Amino acid sequence: MQNTGHSHMKLFKSFIQPLVLSGAALLLLLACEEEPKSIYDPDVVGNPDPIISTVVPDSNFSSSNVVFAGIGVVVINGENFSATRDYNNVFFDGIPGIILTASTTSLRVQVPNITGDSVQVRVAVRGAYYFGDYASPLPIISAVREVGGFIDSDPYISTVSCDNSGNIYVNGDKDIYIVQPDSVKALYNSTLLTGIGKMKMGPAGNNYFIISSAISRITPPDVTEGLWFKALPEALLDFDFNVTGSIYLAGVSGLIFAFDVDTKAFEVDSTYYGVNIRALRVFDGDLYVVGDVLDTLGAIVQKGIWSSEIVGDELVGMDLVADLGNIDSDGSLTVTSIAISASGSIYLGNMNDPPLIVYENGQFSPFHEPILSSPVGALSWGSGDYLYIVRQARGDVTQRVLELDMGQAGAVYHGRD
Image (cartoon, rainbow, N blue to C red; front, side, top):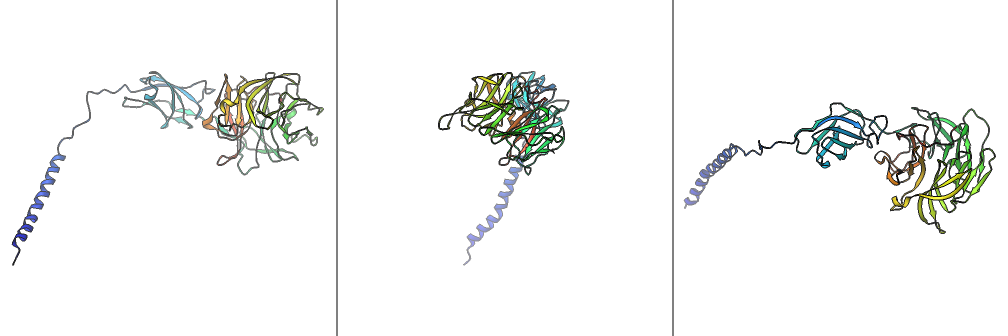
């Protein structure tokens, strides 16, 4: 017997399902054709668009009216900025700068680490519909550059010296290379000794250097006077020339030897006995010493910068200039070198971060950290505005010699004629 009820139900489904689907599609089509509600409010008025009239370097961060990448600061003058600093955004070829201060007519901005002859400067202000574009492209240059063409496969480099003609000298095993302005390294002269420590320019174009417990020198290539060598009572860490022409040599015990270059005689000064001397520099009639005070077991109890008055070749007093413990909370500060500007600012090279530290106006601060890398092995201020830095290899950091535009001259150096 046939199941007619089941057959009728199948016939009903085959008829009604297309009608339901067609009705749903029609409703969807009608819904799509309805006009959507607009979020645009014609009564809302945006803030005035920013206008840039000038972009000029902040003279406190550059010299010669230039802008340095990563460390330079510019002053943007114009209209319709926000006095609330975070309501402004400044872009240099699309890369944001750091806004330091803001008013409705002026923004002070640290530029990002970007270089170019024609960098576009744009300002965006919250609530304004359009950018403010600066009509004149801004040139941004690097404050630091690699010099000499040194690479990792070269012999290990650790020190650098400078003469009055803009030449720099860099060690590499037994060899000393010369790098003339805007040139690559060339062999200058060689020594029989390996393991050169600190090296500094001396009178008559002689490069003096320490090696273990001895001081020696490398003469210009056209001078033939044999090996110059003098051993001292203990291993040596650093040295500098006094105004008298003698050399202060820092021993591993903290003894300082006042060494006469002509007679090779020396006097011993115990002012800094017990200090692990890391660097020293003669400046304005004083000897500045960077080091660690050690207890009887050899543990560091204080890191600091001290100064002693120079009377002839004798040292008088030991005055604490600055306590390095204020910037060494984790004990990682390892000073390798010191440089002093003509104005008296003290710069310290560091094996760790920050690679370069400045002490001025009673405060320590990282110097140009965005564009430098540690470890810094040596510093030497040239006869102009450039500080030369030996960056040593470690991890993915490559060994290089860097020229850093300081925008000012270094302090008088008594080793150069």
